[in-house]
Image (cartoon, rainbow, N blue to C red):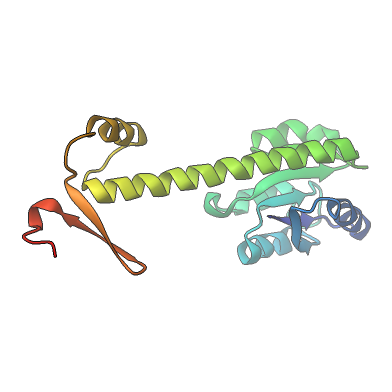
Length: 183
């Protein structure tokens, strides 16, 4: 399930996008914002996966919103605007896509496909990082992913330096050299 935030100062535009997004079973609208300040608050509160962001709004515009977000909580950004002259600037700001109003359903489907792919890649990266941390904890060595895979393939038939001992829900890593007795 992808959490989506809709940011637009026009109520009809927010409502129209909300109606279109109801056709996607894997998208949940977690919040809607009328301006940049509300958008920043909604990102902090809801941590959306996708943000449908209007460019021109009173106060903070769409680019101001991006400048005020930290990279750690940055959702995938799909700009939705009536103005095509901001497209290059949007892609320079690492926007995932740029949709012109009125929104074409095929272009919306493409943008959502990109958002799904982006989300899958982020999850795969997080999973790889967790696995690498686990391998480093087991071996007691700081390794890159390539080095960990090479070490794992090169250590076949040898004893590990550490053992993972599972007790209920807790896993403890123990140096083999520290083991005197196993019962």
